[in-house]
Length: 196
Ligand code: IMP
Image (cartoon, rainbow, N blue to C red; front, top):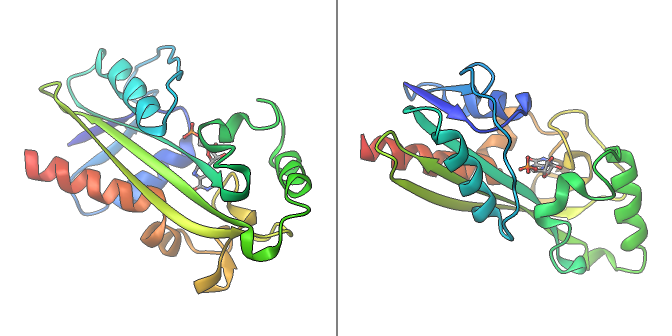
């Protein structure tokens, strides 16, 4: 069965397909499903934005639609950049620039207070147009020196003390086993399977 993923981000569709292996579901991007539409993410929460994306795409298909909204929340910055993670420092800034800005903002924050978590909210609109949301978290500490080449976005500075490495140094399987998106997606798939 198909699940249309309400995103233009190929990395996300790939990560989601890795997690869906063996479930009988296959993730397709909007492009693969021939859907093109403008989505205005203007809610003030991860769940709100995920619902906007899923509802917008569900207007164009009767397949399952799954949308996620995610970001990194830094405790010493009162949860920023949060829902603005991809736009932090300006839409066009590179991740190196985002990292530099974060390190600058955290320069007086002691090591033990450099805690952060990734949040992932997932919204699903089912073929009968009923919907649900789930939200999960991935805890870590901000690492001053970017390290690792796997993953994407903030992974090189997201250090997971239990494993002694950043999430960019983890294999995709290891990251998926504990990540915000991995946990949220597994829960969402469980709920989809229960309902069909
Ligand atoms: P979204 O596409 O609006 O959900 O944007 C999420 C943004 O949060 C991404 O572009 C990244 O900057 C950041 N982000 C979310 N999840 C991850 C992750 O697993 N690793 C690294 N960065 C992430």
